Image 1: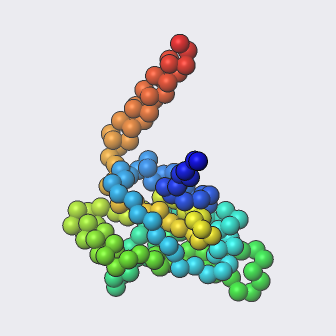
Image 2 (image 1 turned 135 degrees about the vertical axis):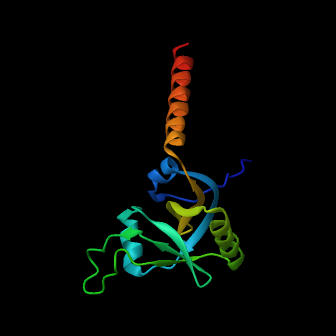
Length: 157
């Protein structure tokens, strides 16, 4: 009998924020639900999502995603959603308070990393991040190139 392995981050990906790991050092991650409209879900299923300059803000004890662009759904008719509206994240109060204090005290930021389906629900993976300096970005590129060279040399043998 074989045991099924659970995937860490759920099912199929809708979108991945590629620039997040380039510009930020991810310290911790968390899975959150999102409060969405029907046309937003249909547009996400079509893959029309952009993470450009999106981040998580905290207002009145709630977490909100700001700047996430979900393109209008073309077959929606007259009831369209606003593409860049703020959307509430569904998190436990303790998680919100814990991350809110870390952001305020340490000067960290919370950035969306991935959007994906999990049990027919749309989930957002968010990361507690520290901004990388230019020399840190260059160091990351050097390490990646060195690892690639080692892998190539191992294949040649």
